Image (cartoon, rainbow, N blue to C red; front, side, top):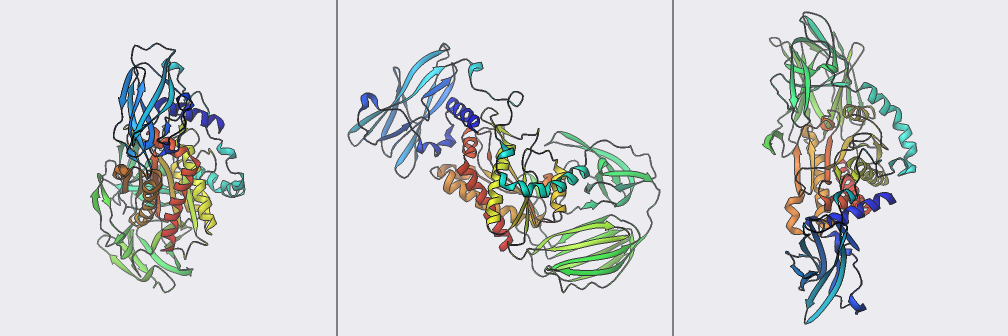
Length: 583
């Protein structure tokens, strides 16, 4: 960690914080006043280090913190520089100066100290700032993934969690073994049936080029359907080509999530209720089935709208019921008693002989209490569970997913000295601590720099029977001025979770991290958005992905490396989760 701090300080001095860092330097230091004159308290600090190592021709940003209302300028050699618009704190303002280093400057050369001058109420004070030293670019502090190890000692970050990590380790290993790889499997040759071999297989409309649709299901392992063709599409965000089998039920599945077996027709299916079991408000039904048919699951009376360039945004979770439609099914029998369910007040069957489908429709007791469903095949039985919202925080199971890890560092910041994968796990530990203090059971998809892919992370959530799943990320952009936080969901019933976390994070960004910069409040607000991130595509529980800031913005990156800020952000995420579980 000492090495990490040194790297950050050196790099921070080199760039000296773009405009977003103003609030952070209000605690800054600075050198002694000329000739040891007594301080008048007008100037608080000049810059944040004793030296600035810069390249010829580079523009630097200097911050002088002085009392509100003071007239401030800086002198460097024979030149005078006036401040840009100051940003005010309660007593002091941060005055920003842009200083261009002459392109003709020699390396290595001392260009002298920067001197700040401030006048207020007839008094003038001077304070020496950093010495400017020019260097060649290759002499600048640099950290690269190829030459430097990760800058955080995550393996030894918090030994108190080792028991929990060991407990979850078998679950994570099982998840990795079941996850898909997106490899190209056997081509379609006709008269073949696809059998799902992955833990779950995402489905997409046949005419979909790249996007997912939230009311299309994930097929359980063992699901079978007749193949009618093959296709491929390019995910523009990932730059990856995915290969699909087109199925007779009107969906397509990734080829690496299924295997093919000979077959030319789909037999008719019948469903017969074997048992109904209610526990703690959760309802589980077992149906004897002829074979493992494909199915559709949709929310009744859920409204979507287009926003942020995507179609399936929701303003609220408005669904009044849930429908499960089984394909190739001509008969269904058995009356289901919903009295033990906290979610459904009643349910009914409907058959469509012309479409060969049977639909089981649940009617919700009230909107907002639905927390997902699970469907899997066990022998010749179809097992369907309608989940319920936990009865408070105690006893609830939360799975946190620190994004990236192993050789996938995610976004990087401060000259690649800071890895997103490390920031994510440090914040996740803060969330875990805050939730456990309130009685929740909390697991993580990785406890160190572990290797686990996207499908494996969802399998961990399913195997641990999570009540909530939250993936924690930091952002990155080619636009290095971008700042702020945002949250994402895929399923409509996950939108309240994303919203609860987002508004807690937004409050921390505005009231703490950027408290002295109200002009940036709108830039901070990234909103709550629909997006089909893999880790948000869970049917079994509400799931959200949160972005806590931009590592590609030097100021915000530095902000995120501070332990006190990680704690503020982690506690905000925890408050959002608690709000969702207890409302």
